[in-house]
Amino acid sequence: MSTLEIRPANLNRRSLLKAAGLAALAGIAACSTVSVPTGEGAGVSSSATTTLAGIRGSAGLPALVPDAQLEQAALQQAGYMASRERMSHTTGWGKDFASRMKDNGVRGAAAENIAEGRFDQQKLFDIWMHSTGHRRNMLDPDFSRFGLAYVRDGRDPALRYWSLVLGR
Image 1: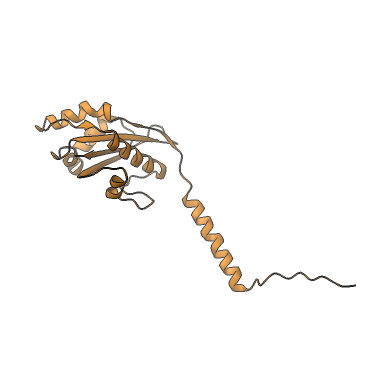
Image 2: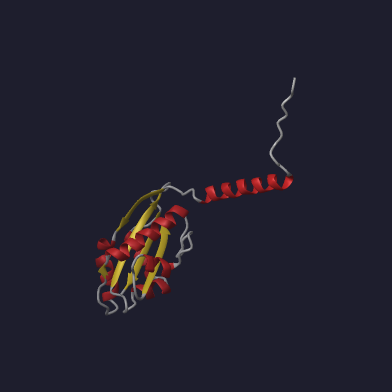
């Protein structure tokens, strides 16, 4: 009678460590793709036209025109921030502001204001007007168009992530 012996196929220490390392990397990669739930989002440029016209008019500047392309870029960034629960001008996939604008077909000078909070649109502009850099962006005479959007946090509907993109 013969016996059958089963042996692991070359499972030496190096192979085991390599397999464990690959499994750990796969686990880390899987964690980084998990996204936080986000709530409703909207492009709201048309509702901000009067507010921005007032802000710019008080400085002797022409009103900004709502722009669908800039609104889409703003909505994209607001969504990214809501999914990561943090404000940022860059994204997790390595896109800085200039790269995002180029990817959205925005050419020429552009700027972005971002915010996070439990406030309405009027309070948002009040906050930005009391911040030197944000105010400078909104009053830049080189800009003629804008896009404004927000995305709500998925767990706290009162919390919104805002993005305003300004361009020529």
